[in-house]
Amino acid sequence: MNKLNGRYIRQIPLIGTQGQEKLQSAKVAIIGVGALCTVAAELLVRSGVGSILLIDRDVVELSNLQRQSLFANSDISSSKVVAAKRRLLEINPEITIEIAPVHLSAKNISQTISDKINLVLDCTDNMNTRFLINDYTKKNMINWIFASAVGWSGMFSFIAADSACLRCQMPKKANGETCQEAGVIGAVTKSIASMQSNIAIQFLTGQDISNLKNKLFTYDAKTISLRNFDIQKDPRCKTCSNEFPSLKVQGQEDIVRFCSSGMFQVSRETKIDLVKLQKTIESEFTETILDEISLRFGNLTVFSDGRALIKAKTKESAVTLYDRYISN
Image 1 (spheres, rainbow, N blue to C red):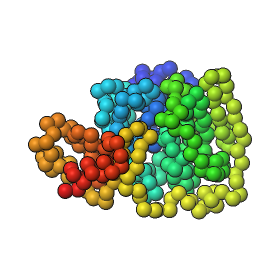
Image 2 (cartoon, helix red, strand yellow; image 1 turned 180 degrees about the vertical axis):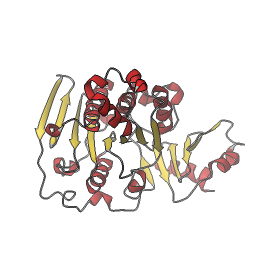
Image 3 (cartoon, rainbow, N blue to C red; image 1 turned 120 degrees about the vertical axis):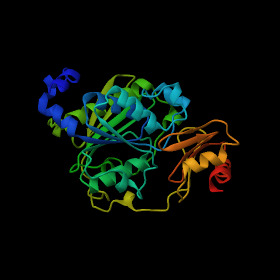
Image 4 (cartoon, rainbow, N blue to C red; image 1 turned 90 degrees about the vertical axis):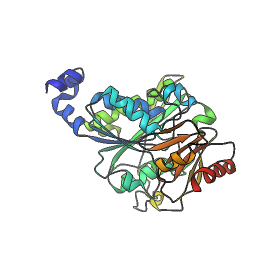
């Protein structure tokens, strides 16, 4: 335990040696590698959580740097999961970081998130993905922590496997304003992510957090006020009735526009040989970057699973670029 006592000496008096060992054996999945994740993941890595899975389909953009604290100018255009993994392992090389550069859907969530995961952190920015997380975790009896931050405010909720779920709390599935539309203060995302991480560490070390179940917490950064609301199971909830509507596989949309302005994801049911593609386009693009999961050139970031992130003014322009360089 000498190594443990050296790196974690300031927290062991609070969680004990057994608590630290529980952190080391824990497996946490974090969905969405943006403002919330870059804080939460760093806190969990520094605390000694043994294994973390990062899931995100996006790349780093200049506008991310105002609040996404793991990234720097040198990471722009890099896959978020690759850049985050690199930085987190610099912080704590004793832990394991796995990455999944995928567009999470009903079709692939069971292959992406193992049922051996101890806890899921929601760090996404849209309700469709949150309801997908909600249904998957409820079906597989996995605890998770919902979190959101927009403007000067945020909210979070510890959703235990046997408690009221997100659909009980927000049955209408309303999409509110996004950070692109309303803006967001970096200090707010850090506050919400810190509280999310605090709950995670308590849960993973075996602390009694029963008082946090069936509650939704809201935070107003302007007044520095935290409120909580009691949540009850909704007898009409389709998730708690084991219908799990968000897990029903539907045709995946071929083209998705990101929260980030000017970025489209184009998907096709195909496998791409990135090395071969690099050779094909090298006569037109003098600068290409091939890493462990993607190939970047021009305004495109291409993944081997058939996806491409394309910076374009319109959906039609994005499809044209995909067909020009990838389909042929």
